[in-house]
Length: 626
Image (spheres, rainbow, N blue to C red):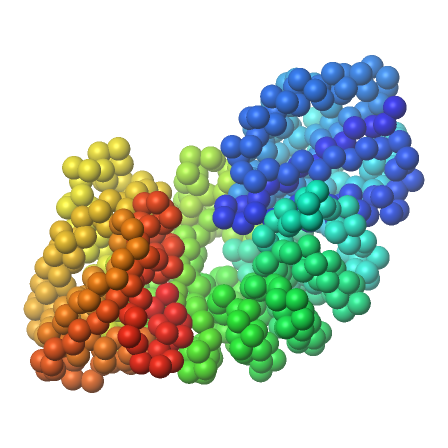
C-alpha cells in the first residue's frame, strides 16, 4: 500500500499562482528519495480560506477511509503544511480538524512562520517542524522508517515526551542546481492547453545579505549568504512558463540586481517577451543597494513595458529606527538622486515605509512622509506586523513592544505593533489612522494632486492634514457606517475599504468637506488656500466614479492642463494661484466603483483620464499620479 502524503499551500491575497514551494519539496523527493515507489504525494493548493471547507468535506468522505485503512496496515499517513503569515490561521485550524478526525496522522510544518518551534510544538496540532531549507530534510524524513532515528536528521524540531528536541542545524545547499525544478511536478495548463494560472512565483536565488530586525528573510530560515541557480536552469524553466501562457513572473528573490547574473536574467526576460509576447510583467524585491546595475535593470525592464513598479524599500528614515533595524548603512537611504533620475526617465518608482518600528515616533514619521511625498510619485505605507523568527520578535520585551492580533487571528497571522519604548499606544494607533488616510486619499485617488502640491510647496504639513480630513470624512459618513466602530482607529484601519466606497458614493459632500478643511488649515497658517483648492478641483474631476463608463467635459477657471502637467512631473504649477484663464478638459471615466473597484488601494486604476492630453503626457500621468 502506498503511504498517503498531502502537502498543503495557499495563495496570498490577490496573488493566485501554482504551488511552487510544495512542488519543489516533491520534486526533490522524487529525484533523490529511496522510498518513492511506495509513497504517493498529493499537492493540495487553496486559492483562499474559503476553499478549505468544501475540500475538508470531500476529504472526510473520500480520503479519511483510506487514511484509516493505511493506519490499520501499519502505514503512516502524513500531512505537511507550508506556513506563511497569510495562511497560518487557516492552516492551524485545518490541522486541528484533521488531527481530530485521525489523531494518529502525523502533521508536519515548515516555512518562515513556524521557525520558532517552541511557539507551536505541544501547543498547536503539529508533530514535526522543519527548520531552515527543507528539501533535503523532508526527503530524509520520508525515507526514515523509525522515529528513533529522527534525531539523526538535521533541521528538525519535534516532541520527545514533553521535551522539545531540535536536531543540529541543516547546512544550506550551496549548489542550488542540485534541487530539481518544481515545474517537473506541476501542471501549468489544463486539458485544452490553456494556462491554469496567470502568475507564478519563482526563485532564482536564495538568501539575503541584510539582517533587518523586522524581517525573517536574512535572519531566519534561509540565511544571509546568497546562492543562485544557473542561467541554464533558469532559461529552461522560464521557457516552460511562457510556453504555458503564464502572464506574470514574480521573483521570490530578496535582492534582485545585487548579483552580477541578475542583469542576464533581466535580458532573458526581455528576450522571451520579444519572441513570445510573454511575460506581460515582472516583479521582484529589489536590491537594497540600488547600484548602477540595479538601475540599468530597472530601465531595461521599463523600456520593454515589463516593470509595474520600481520600489525603494526605505522602511524608515528616523535615525534611531534605522539603527535598531540594522539598516543605517544601506545605500537606499540616499534615495533622492535615485528617485530624481528614475522619475526623469519615466520609471514608475515608489518608496516603501513601515510605521511602528521600534525607535520611530509619529512626529518624525510624519516629517519623513511629507518629505517623501515631495520626492516620490508613489508611496506605500505598511503597518509593522511583528513576525515570528525576527530579531524584534525575540527582543519584544526589551523594546516594550505592544501588539494586537491582526484582524483577530492572534499569533497565527502576526500582530500589529501599536506601541513600544519609543511611542505609546495612542501614538501607535494614530499612526495606523494616518496610514488609513493616506490609502484613502492618495491610493484611492481622492486627492493625489492636491497632496503632491502641498508636499512640494511645504507650507502646510500634509500628514496632520490627512488625519484631520479623515476625521471629517468619518463624521460626514457616521450615519452610514453604523456597523464600524468609528471610535476605534484600528477598526477604521481594518474597515478602510468600506469607508472609501461609502465616501465615493457621496462625492459632492466628500469634496466639500475636504475643501472646507483645506481652507481652514491654510488660513490658520496664514497661507493662501487657492492653489490647493484648484488642485482639489482637478482631483475631483479625475476621481473614480460609480456607474458606467462615461466621458465628460469639465471646465475650470484656471489653466487646469498646465497645473496637471506640472504636478504629474513632480513640479509646482507656475503661478497657479494667479492664473485666471479658463480651461476645458475632456475626461474619460471607466466607472466601476463598487463593482470592479472594491478597495481603496486600486483607486488609480479606475481614475478619470484626460483624453485630449498633449503628446506624451499619458505616460507621465501613469507614473506620477498612480
